[in-house]
Image 1: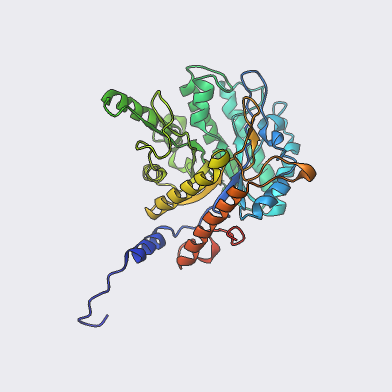
Image 2: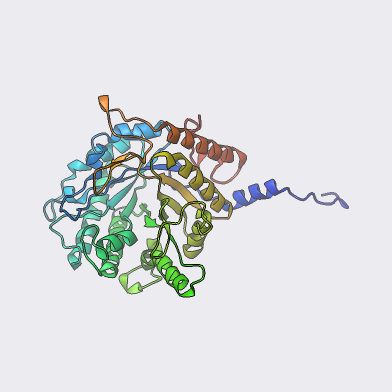
Length: 417
């Protein structure tokens, strides 16, 4: 700089670009920023009926077609699941016939998959409250990792136990899903944490490159404005959302075996009804008590210092596109504030029959298979996804360094057209 020349102060836009370039240099874990999540719940209902959402949506037999449909829209990474109850029908005997076609379909289409190992369901011949459960799950996880390692050469991704927090509440405290217990949520949560830790250890023995995500609900709970006691109770309840993650990281109850390395990518599930008044109704979007998603993401990032992902998010029927619009805007806001976010998983990506009554839930980009095996596409959802992809692509082009440069933060141009 010439002597006597005053430096030009950068504009606000230039400052924002510099911040993004400085804070988003780590390469993304996933092959696409948008992920498609296939509903793979396999738990028993209170009436004894076992759900199998992969079968109910025909995704198990149409996985290759489904993966290609998503790839046409720029989605090259998905969450999908193994059905433990089908694979281990007899203790210690594994039948992979329900899984191998899906694994090979992913390999054939070049689809990156985060495999859920336990999505609320387990074989009937195992008592989830017994010490055997943790050991059996670890052996199943190890066997699954061996199969995946033998079939594909890429880095495997897993979600060992889906929604430990919700499962311990719904299955351990309120008896809504299996194991239909009441007042045992704390016990169930600790078993599931130990199972997740044992599974991660087992998988890493097979493939040290393996990556892991959590999938825990992200919630906000508030109290009455003029009732301090109610506010304190609401805050205690809100903080319970971090218990499972704290246990995995060894921040709480380290005797469970938790350590920081058990938190890799912190996946967070966020839906329109994830904020409510304690002992009261859902807080509607736009209400003064509704907490911005970006603020919630910043809190989690500061608490764990890990990359985040939106492991599940979505809304039903006409709310689908507007919800995607809101979530993407909030995610970008969080990224501008320094949060490393690996991607957004649209969940479920296929419409599915509801758990309790079989009502078709119109939540996906794709609908039920019709004539000739084709799935209808929600046009408004498709258009919104394309619009949001255009925004991300513009940001890629704007940044000349960091993971957006060179297409490493993958948003397909095909998606944005």
